[in-house]
Length: 331
Figure 1 (cartoon, helix red, strand yellow):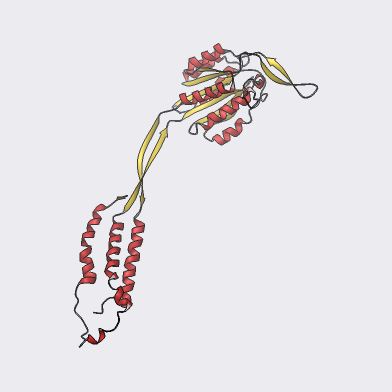
Figure 2 (cartoon, rainbow, N blue to C red):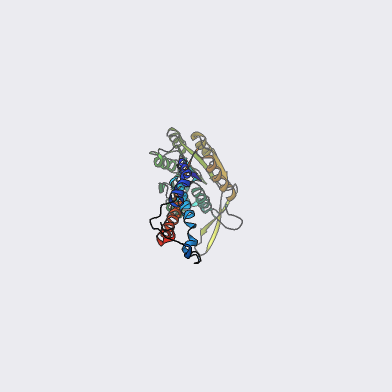
């Protein structure tokens, strides 16, 4: 606890004089009694017995009042953290090949898109201060959510991701261009695209290489993620006889192209052959895109004079009331 006006405590030195002036000084009697010896045998009243308490109440009351005037307060240390936010666009491949079930966990059968949604969910929740948007793509890009700080709404929009939501195919160049368009007016210190795909560019009007050059020109970093194993992956297909059948599709990730896009823009390429690896990829990207933190320390004071003021009011009020009840000596 500290005092805002510690010099006020010097008034405590005046207390003895104030108490003497109030209760100790001898005053001239205004009534003369011929002889008070006849009153001596009478027992002392409760008023007379309580009389010594008056100076004590007066002293304590003034002391509490002086402490209250000194403004005691308690300092609370606080820190304010300021960061330069990052604007991030997540590109998610929703072509039918993302139905392949080679990114399952030990306890859950998951296709590539479901695995991507699970790790993107964690990625978004780990970055509450960043604006994040989502663009889905197959034969063409589809802007699912603009850059936003409302991550609760963003996660609800992400649940809409599903294979077949747009025409089938893989337009990686056009998808990167759509992400660039989202980041065009961004004033963030860092602008990032995270592209996840399991195939090669086979649709669209813009090549991934040209899109990467455009991203570099705008200061946008692109991280690329190739999702899927090396062996042919099991893919569920509809059966004309009802139920579900499975077919096996080969892996066709264009790793040289994904590496070129990442290296051209200052990002990195990652290969995720299973769910654990995919989860680690997004964790690494999250760690690499941390911005500098500026911490400002300050002290917020909490006033503590009210209890002292209340105590002073009670003590001085009680002293006054007892005085009015004729506990003081009759002059």
